Figure 1 (cartoon, rainbow, N blue to C red):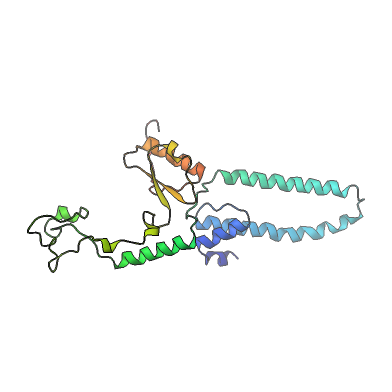
Figure 2 (cartoon, one colour; figure 1 turned 90 degrees about the horizontal axis):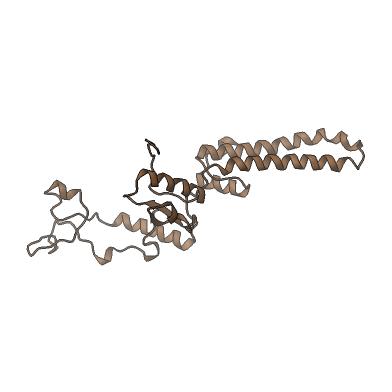
Amino acid sequence: MRMAYENLTVAELKELLRERGLPVSGKKADLIARLSDGEDTTEEAPDEAPQEEPKEEIPEEESPDEEDEFEEAGDFEEEGDFEEWDELHTARQKPVLDESTKSALKMRSEQSKKQPKFRRQEWFRYRRLSKTGYRKPKGDDSSMRKNRKYRTPMARVGYGKVAAARGLHPSGFEEVIVHKADHLDGLDPEKQAVRIGSSVGNRKRSRIHDRADELGLRVLNRRQIDKRGDL
């Protein structure tokens, strides 16, 4: 069955894990290993059943006690497993979206493919202008402003995207810019994602990462932090 799981996507593997009550964190290899381990435990159960058949001769008063002991042992193992799973990062990789939002995101993606790339005036003449973003052309003699031929198109109202997906991340999350770990409280991990401000240092960024992992929030611009000094 391991080969069959490898042919599935990450989203399908997570759905199987949710149905079985297992955590959905980790990479694809971790998800496959978790599913295969769950099947191994279910396959071992029928093998143990025939061994318990000769115990029918035991008086009825003793058999319930033994069953309770087995149940307690099973509960203890499950609780231990969940304690280990709680230490893992369980943030959702994808948001929970309705069908209307999914169709709006798909429509916006198709519109972006047809949209031309807006460039700044005289971007082909000066290298520094080619690296900057678009700006509205100005000047009485501007060929771009007068819409002359062979000039870069200007950003206009007609290039607007579908309003239902406006402001959403390509994944479907609603971006929330934060600068401190306290700003994460009250955010919805199923609809909102975190983007750390560019002026935040490594010390606060590390705290935001830890707090986001506790709340199950996704950090869009997560990066590895080299801990130096007292970090």
